[in-house]
Length: 246
Length: 123
Image 1: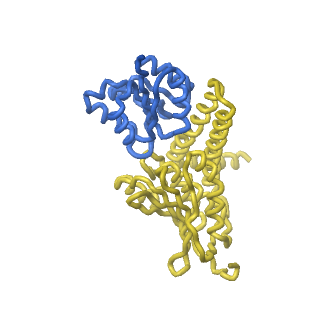
Image 2: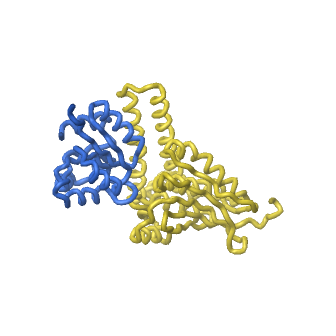
Image 3: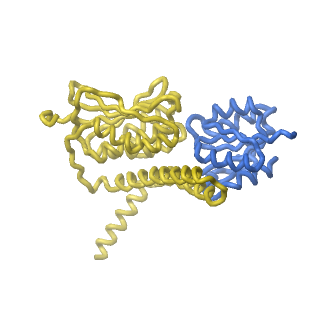
């Protein structure tokens, strides 16, 4: 019994030590929405607000807490990846893009931004773990909200390549191009480093780290394309051979 | 009629700056918001605010870049700067003072009306 407990403690300590930079990055990422929720709640307490204003601030508190909860859920899942098996299943990538857009639409609207799906006529069938893939794509789309300019839509897309053997799901944002030094760090974090590195200027890189862990757990790959007017973050998965399902 | 002192808020969180703007305007100040450092530099140049309330971490260049920029212009370096950040506990307050920061507000512990109190205090 004691031996088993010691083993758990040792395992826990190891995980803590290995993940120290991750914990710091996570703490920083969570501090921001928590501080915002507190400030918004205090402003309701102290200000003389109209009913419409109260409704708006409550909505902002809800949306901000949902963002923080998404991050905590992703972090919890990341910590348990090693002990889990993730089934790969055939699924419709366009329908997944629609789900992600639907989930984030309230947040985009509240920030005065637009998120849309790139239209596609030919059907696709992907093979991946739907839950992990959805989390990756939601993270990319959430991240794009903060870096895209307010004039252009953020676009979620799915397309096949490599003779139909692979499918790329991506989130394209339009905004300032990433500086070269930031791009190099991003390439590094997409590569081999397990340590969160800044993926965007002043970002902890935690989102990219989480996406990479999820992708590796289902043999998918993440990447990014630097454009003159923004960036595309994508995840590549295998196409399903069960075309009869289409 | 006397002109209202102008407070320039440089912070990418539009929900938060909307609250602060409302409080400042109710207290008799004029307030303007911009969402990043580059817009902030442009606004400082055009508006010559009485006080700047600056966040540190935003998309694009961070707040330190703006502090450097202000310090390099003698006509701007007299504008009091209030740093309003989630990372106050991680900062070296002495070096921030050297950059011209007169007050550091910690978003994780401050109350919204502290913005008004501190703006009044530095004017």
